Structure formats: structure tokens, C-alpha cells
Length: 442
Image (cartoon, rainbow, N blue to C red; front, side):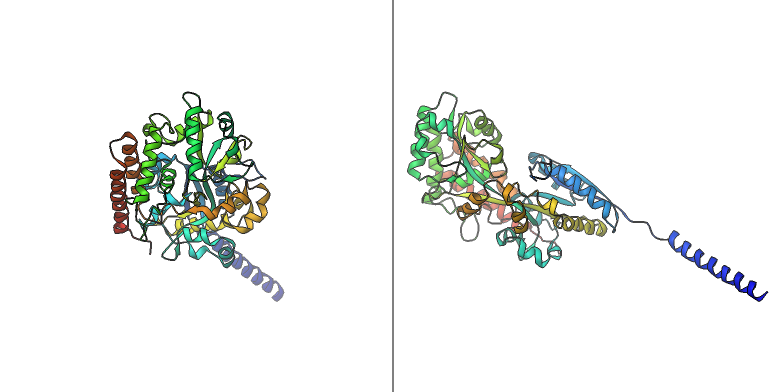
């Protein structure tokens, strides 16, 4: 009898324990429902091991994989693609709304302005010692303000000019065509010879070189041309400094080139895409190109050359593309956003899509070196890279006014001297406003 009592007592205890355990399981809190919004403009990527070529598709894939393994919340990743011309609508106009971006993947020259709104969080807590040593110093420096990192660099793109070799040959300019996959540089005298010859010998409705001033798209390249006569472009404080002998000379060169027929007719009313179409239609001999788009061209018919400079070495520009995280007032969402970025950087397959340009990660470069188009040439050409923003705030405000003065120069309503004065005044006012309004995330 005593044995049966012991068995019953043991059974009762076991039942109670199972009940307690069952109760604990039932009361386990559900994961927080979190929706992450990632926004991205049209950006081409490349990975020799997959068929994905658009960063939008890569982010969709990464979002699904991240959500499937994430333990911190029940996450849904929503990826939104926007056109560059609609950036304000998709980014700043969405601040403090349910459609606000939690993560932005874009080029730093647009992203820098958002840092000064106080909404972009520093990401130094995500940066491991391995990441610090793996990513090159120049990329870190371009991604930082006051020593804090506000963007994780992914890859950089280098902008040079490009030219149609067939049009050069048709005009008897064979001697200025270098080797395939070479980035050339021409002296100022060679530039003048090339442009004047093209203007004289190209067929009607074809033009030597791009120029545009309809909107702010492509203005970076016009700014680079304004260094052609020796201007530093910025002063020692990073402010516009074109009202100088060198700056005015470069503006005069642009005005004179237009009158000589070096640019398309009515170029003041063209945008960069119009010039792209002219180049692709063999109606424009010299345009601009970056390292993300050159590999899609027939390089036996297309040459690369630096922007003109007084010393003949030429200039190029380079900008970093990467990830930025916004604080939208939800701690769980902010944590998930930062965890997504960490997840992305820990995944070799996702990192390998940076081979479209020069990867910021040395390890990625080593893995994908055979697939990075003209890696050695672009890397060597970084010696000729110039800073085109000086890390100024309110660069969007700068761009809103800069092109209007180039438009006035091309229409002849402002002289080169007046244009230099106006650019310095209005662009520096925009920068000053940016610093006055600047506030960084705590």
C-alpha cells in the first residue's frame, strides 16, 4: 500500500511539474512585430556567382534571409526603390511618418546631408576590429563626421570621362587613342586640339563633348571641369572659391567652348540623360562614365580619360556608396535595422555584390578580384581623385543653386566673372545654412 502511495505521489508531482512547464511555455511573450523600411535608388551591382544585378533585388533577398533567422523580433523587411529625381519625396518628405526610411543604401554625397538632421545614428558600435582593418582608410574618412561613422562603406565608384574611339578615328584623331582598358590623360593643348578637330569634322547634329544645365543631375562633373584651369574649387575652410583668376578662367573656357561648337546645341536645356542618349547614339564624342557602367560598354570602341587639368595628369572623382541607419523613435526597430546591417556585412555572398565598383572591403576585393572591371587601372587612378564635396552639409541645397548659374553662363545672361561671384555667394550661403541647422544624433 505504501508503494502505491509513493507511485501516486510521484505521479502527482510529475503532473504538477509538467503543468508548470506547460504554463511557462504558454505564457512566453510573443516576438514584437517590426517592419523595417529600406530605401534605395536605382543602383547596379554585380556578383559573378548570381544573376542579380540590381541592389533592389539584392536587398529583397537579404531582407528575407535576415528575417528568417532573426531572433530579436518578428521582422518584415520592406524594400522601396525610388528615382533620384524623387529623392526628397521618398526621404525627407517621409520623416516622422510611417513611411520613413529605417535604412538607406545610396551614395554618400546625397546621404551626407541627412546626417545633419540628427536622425542618422552613428554605427561605430557595429564596427569590429576586423572591419576596421578590412575597410580602407579613405572610405572610413569619407563616412565620418567629428570622428563618428554615420555610414558603413560598401564600394566606391570612380568617375572619369569616356570617348567614342570610332568618332575619333573618323576625325583623324587616332594618335590620341590609348590602349584598351587604359585611363588616359591629355594635356590642355591636346584637349583643345581634340575638341577643335571634332567640332570641324564631326557630321551635322553630332558634337564633341557633353554639357548640360537643365537640373542638378550630373552637376558633379561640371564642378570637376571648373578645376581645369588650376582652381582648387574650395578654400582652406571647404567653402566654394571660384571667384579667382583660375575659377573665372575655367568658366570662360566653358563659355568659349560653347561658342566654338564644342557642346550640343541648346545644352543649357539638356540634362545628363540627354547627353547619355547622344553618346549611345554616336552623336557625342566625349561624355562621362563611372566604373559601374563601363563594363557594359564595348571597350574596343570606348576609351577612358580623366577630366582636364593644367598639369596634364587629369582629375577624377570618387564617391562611396553604403548603408545609413535612421532613428525613427522606435528602439526595437532601430536595433533590428542595425542588426540587419551587421548581418549584411557578415555575409560574404552579399558583400561580393560590391564587385560592381571598388569594394571598400579588402577581403571582398581579394575574393572577387578576377571579376572587378579594370581594378588595377581604377586603383592606380585614385592618385588623381579630387574631393568634390569637402564633406559640407546641405549639399542638396548647394546643388539646388549651382546648376542655375551654369545655365545663366551658357545662355549668356551672366559673364564668367558674374557667374563665379554668384556661385560662391549662393553655394556658400547653402553651406552656411547647413552648418547653422546642423545637429548630429546623440
